[in-house]
Image (tube, rainbow, N blue to C red; front, top):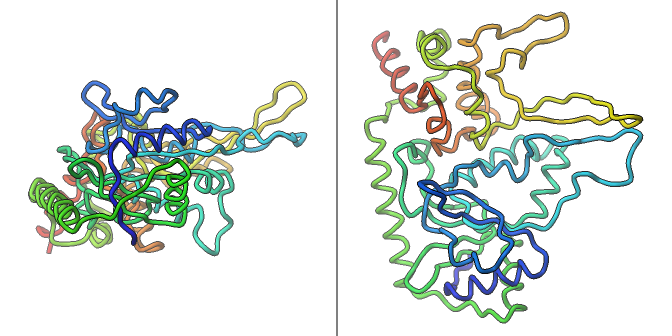
Length: 353
């Protein structure tokens, strides 16, 4: 992996150049007490970008997998309603990139028919990652074996350093961005060993702080192994009876939920097929013709949600369909907490053994 040093003024110059060439630009900004990814239409806002914060409120999937979209028009229209545009997303965190990796597994894995809209948007989007500067109480990426900084899945990654950024090149598209910098009159410089060392110390310190913050939630077994032992656990009934109100907040904030519902609608002589987000906790999700439902109770659906993310997906793709971002807990009115749920399961498994 190539590594360079990029000054803050040169970063702003580069982003302004991309904006001037018609590239859609999204970056993190502080909005009240949170971070949000917002579209930049004016280069004067570049100085307000927050790169050393935490993950944004909204999940990265919303840029590639739209909440609602038309996927087919009949009679067939010559115009593509979903034609992708060239985009640059700045400030993606390690958990964001883990989530996109999960989407890639589900939608683009070799041997399956690729999801065309997602594929086109992935191909037309450049991603510049950045290290987390701190962590939230709800963050738990380290419990899943991840880090509070990007290690893969980025085109470029920026780590804050004195006067600028240590910049890693992570892909061929990242090389394209380096070439684009050259065409914009920006020269990246050689990174110094002391800058690398300082970056690594920052990363180590934050990783240790995050691991320490999650120490109370550590369990002796991996989450997938706990799922294998917890099919009949009373924990699921407790979540259904006492906490979940089926608001779908977890669906809309989870960066790895990729399920959808298709329905047809007609406007005059045009028929459209529309896709919207769907979730396995919804009562109609598993319902089949004739009205039969393999998961008729909320208890069964909540269990399936956990099993999908931490067992079934793991068995198929050797990774969890959870990034440890904590967004679901932040929005849940019943405060369903993944870490605490597995701690409860672990405690009950231990008591039964």
